[in-house]
Length: 272
Image (cartoon, rainbow, N blue to C red; front, top):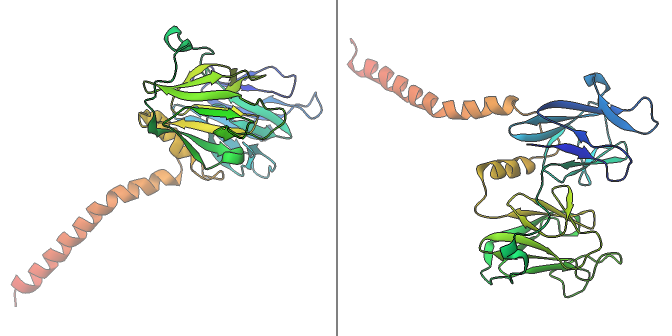
């Protein structure tokens, strides 16, 4: 969680760095229809809570119209790099160190090795392909042409925008002549080596996440949190107590069995 910041793609607003802790975002009293960091939690429309597990977005009571990637948030949700948060009609993108733009020399001009993997996929998490998976057993071309593997039918989108392919288990994004490149984890790149958990955005709202069998435990944990409802409870709340109760349940059963056995022994072998 290094170098985290909120970017404002559509507004002339400097990036807001967010380190470990809680960061309230509310209305700017000096600029109409603008938002900024606020000191008092009572003035916050939303809060970005950063801990070792990730970044959580909490919505203040009674606030409506907060969206993450086009989906409404009522209470709280976990964010991943590249997520688009709309508050009061203003878009903020969670960005971080992201990925480096460009490829190492050995991959710059290397053709796809042909060793595809059905277990490495692009999973749609927004836009037209939400919920669909595209395996990388072969290179996948993203573009406007009907022959594209991932077709985005937008007149402003390039006929052949990018290609995603595998090189010895490395997922490679190659630009094919697009106008603006591709957003990866909130940063604009053209060519890059992708990692499991990276979020790719084409044409502003077509979102995909790279998934592979060699995911780290942290990436798996982040994905599990992403699957929770957008109005989930706060981290560290009653869910922790519930988990503890489940752990204690087997011991309670054992104790009940032992007590029943003791009572039976007293009944059969006790004084008549």
